[in-house]
Amino acid sequence: MNLTLTYCFVAVDDHEKALAFYRDAVGLEVRNDVGAENMRWVTMGLPGAPHPEIVLEPPAAHPDASPADREALGTLLAKGLLRGLVFGTDDCDGTFARVSDAGGEVLQEPMDQPYGVRDCAFRDPAGNIVRFTQKR
Image (tube, rainbow, N blue to C red; front, top):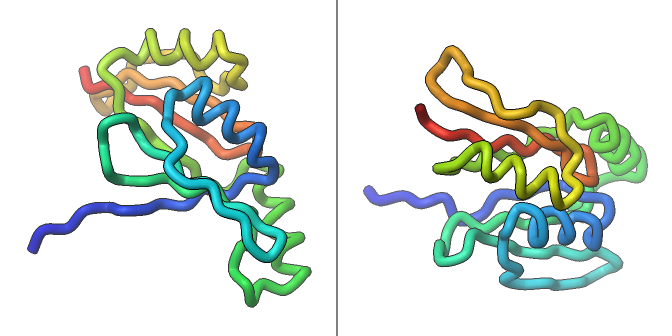
């Protein structure tokens, strides 16, 4: 059996700010931008790689989410408590410089970890944690 990860979803509360981070600072390309029912989904990916694609979606985009659920998820997103993304890189320090120079909110400068990687971390404009790891 051959499996591939096709899509993963990241909740964002402002697509324009998210685009500035993921497209302009991180370097992802926009593959699709769709609006429906007062919501918006932007699909992005790594240049030259068909998968996985990252879908930026509103918090609680599920059509059956109650107003209370939407509010709760919005609160968790604002606190940075929803899961984020981890990218692999062959140059952690260079990636850190590019993202921080573009205005990314730094959570952790590049450092060697005891589990065999050098990594750094940022918070995207919605509060999600985005890490960049380089195998040592």
